[in-house]
Length: 386
Image (cartoon, rainbow, N blue to C red; front, side, top):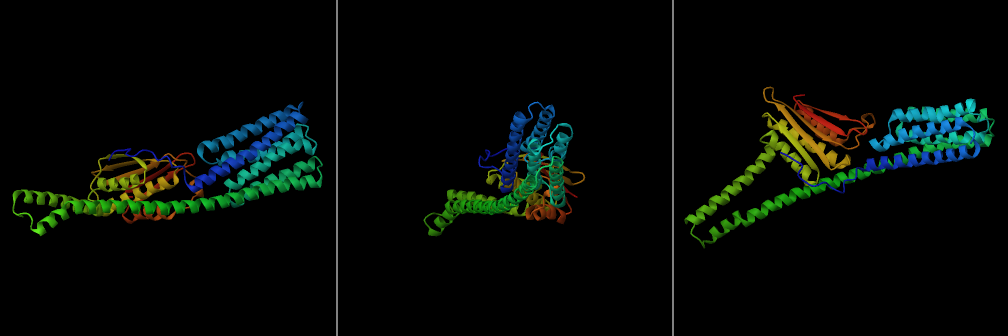
């Protein structure tokens, strides 16, 4: 069991949810870029001789690069950097410019207030429920307080606060819709992959049928016709050869069903994944003999983990490592991908991971452990005994 075996799949461009994440990341980043552009123009035009405004602009730029640059590299936002952006760019900078930057008019404070608007949009796609409401409330209070300090008109105060609230609302709505569409796309892909797997199994059976037709059945038909002497040496030799071929085919099918050994069971799971053009690198070391039901459970869990890599990880390459202790009859199998990973606190296990991996391992006295983080890929560890 060594790999890789198949060329990378050039069509692997990530799951529907990953596409939704990428779109929202890009949209909120462009929203921030527009506000930084307004800030630069405002400072150059109205606060050219105010060092505090240049310093505030540099701070806003640095935090924006940290927030969105990290998100682009890891595939999603880091909440620590998001909160830093909310607290500094959205809440602190407007009050600092009022207190020490000479911003005593709404026009001079407006550009930094816009940063809170794009902070609220980013918060809407990352934070959840009460945390989101708290962040948006903090930004809205900063708007109200800041504009009241500079004696802005009611229209200005309500207009900017309305823009902040609806930026968060629209970002949340878009994110909800795109996630829903992404999940629907993933479900459709899963059904298509299942149909493709069934088609591959049917093609394999058809190949076996054709082989039987061209060999064993052809020999039997010839014997039944009486056109040859069944007792001749060359006919007996051919019959023995066809019987051996048929025996190998039957044994192969039986082995696949009973999983004669753990190595063969894992080989079958990897082969199923590779039929769907997932490149798998496999390493096995000192695997012990285990009960057939344990081998079946491990193989099926590995198969589902590889299916998840193919469907969701946005990569065409996975790594399977199987090690064991023959004296203790223990096994550890890991399935690793180097995709973008995800935040487990925001993830609800699906049917495949919950039943085909966790429940299946629990039924045979084993357990499955999922280890992942944004930007760190996914590692599924299967242990028996648990």
